Length: 321
Ligand SMILES: [Zn+2]
Image (tube, rainbow, N blue to C red):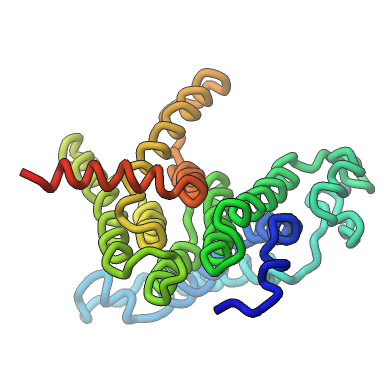
C-alpha cells in the first residue's frame, strides 16, 4: 500500500528528526491556537452574534416581544474594537517573536532543541529565560515518532499513530495552559480514528472503533453525571475530555480504554497530589484531565496489546454472567 522508499522514510531516525520539527510546530499550536479560538469567540460569537443578532436574544428569552437591552450595541462595538487591536493571528503569521522584548526569532534560533541549548534557554537579545517546555515538547514528539517506528515498523499504522501523537501532545499542552480542549483537535482525533478503522490502517475493526468511541464519550459523561447527582453540582467533566477519550476509543478500540483510563487517573492522582504538596495548589484550581489522557494515549499506542488484553479480559468478566 505504501510506496517504495517508505522503509527509509519511516525509519526511526528520519521519523525522529521529523518529530523534532513537528514538535517545534506543536509549540506554536499550543501557544497560538487557544488565542486564535478565543479571539474568534469574542469577536464573532459574543460581539457579532450574541450581542448584535436579534435571533440570539429571541433564543435566550424565548420571546419575540422584548428587545435586547440598549447597552448591548456599545458593548459589542467595544469588544470588536478590543479584539481588532490585538491584530490578526494564525499558526503561520506573524513570525515568532520573544514575548518579553519582541526580538524576532531567526531561523537558526529556531532549530529544535539545539537552539535552546546553544542559547542556554535565554532570548539572544534580552536574556529573558525561554521555558524548558519548548525543547521538552520537541524531544517528546521526536522520541515518540522514533519509538512508534521501532515498535510498529514502517507502515500505515506508524503514520496514523504519529499523527495521533502530534494531536495528543498539542491537546495536552493546551489543556495544561488553559483547561480548554479545542474542538478542532478533538474532532480531528475522532475523524482520524474513524478513517483509520474504515481503511484498516489502525488495525482496529470498525465495530471496535465505534464501541470505543461510544464507551470513551459515555464513560466520562456517566462519571460526571454521577458526580453531579451525588454532590448536587454541575457536571464537572468537561465535554472536551469526553471528545478526547471518544477519539482515543475510535483510534485504539474499546479494549484499550480501561487500561488507558486507569493509567491516566493514576498519573493524575500522583501528579495532582505532588503539585498540591510542593506548590500548595488547592482544589480551587480546575484540574485539567487532558494532559493525563494524552499521556495515557501515548503509552497505549506503544504498549497497545498489553493494555488491550487487560481491557478484553475485563470486558469478558463484566459481560459474562
Ligand atoms: Zn527577548
